[in-house]
Image 1 (tube, helix red, strand yellow):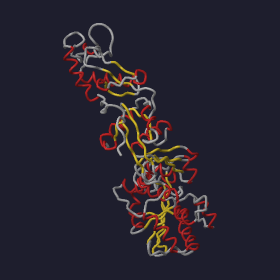
Image 2: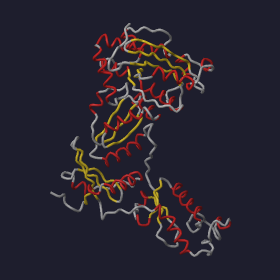
Image 3: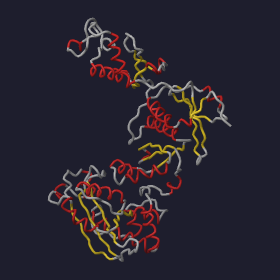
Image 4: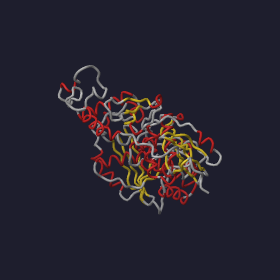
Length: 472
């Protein structure tokens, strides 16, 4: 069979790998095969087992037929690097589901201090572009459809590599060199979606604020993210997949992408926080929704700090509150740690009970406020200094405020209302005026406090007081 000859891609290196798993950073290559084609002529066919220097899992052994005994005397990748670089010289790499192979090769090169900067083409993406009606684009499916010849054991590197020039040539026979070249060229012009996703999703994604959700097999939620430009942020995940192990695994696992547009960046930040707490995506840092938040109340007197349950007590005297904690034990641990570090008296702070000196005083780790050695006023001055970094920022407005957001592309124009760092809802200024003024705030939320505190400092021009009329 002739081999694809292209002026745009004169030198191609078809490549396939077998590995110990699916994580380019943590797993290793066990076999590599390369077929080098120059100007349509095959000039080299090379393969080698590779000692991964780690055990091969049982399920990988059953899939590839490669076991620990087979690779024990094989060269490590570093010993093969010169041969691989010679075969890749001036070439464009071609692989099936190329992000996978390129990810492993990139990490293998980098472990030996070598750059991996070769252009890479994917035959899965080629097949999807030229045969959009096909439901499956794996090698087994394409072998059956195109009648490709198998020259060895499936799931061995050279067998799979040898199928790739056949597949490309079948595409040339049916669509012509120009269309195949154009399909490959499109891959080099912009970052594209992983091969298992429908490229039409890219055209549907808005270039405006919102939240996006990655789903895996069986509709499992993998990841929730937010951006002021959903399309660009989503595509950056798959560009980062070439460098980042987590992004590589996410790229391989994603099967569907959904999104929800918002009126602006702040509403996207809040929606992302809420979704992560409620839906617990696999790849997100865990955020928990708590019924209560706790804070220390202390007004510079001789009384011990009081731990407030903000949901139960509904007290928001930020002038005298320190720290936001998800439970009483976290709050107590923070205050106890501060006392230990600065030799504060735990008995005066209410962390110990009983008569006489506190336990730390007996160890000479308390300056003696509990027995009168240190005046209470002096102790309180030290407490105030220690607690200052924990102090909550007071609400900087006289009352509730509205933050204006306008997503022009999606024609969304809303006002997000807050009071005392608490979210009150999203409203339309004209039609929801009464509801806006009478809205009840949600309980104080630690993440909302952090998001809003940072956002308002940078976007003061979007803030409106609810006590004034909307300007004409």
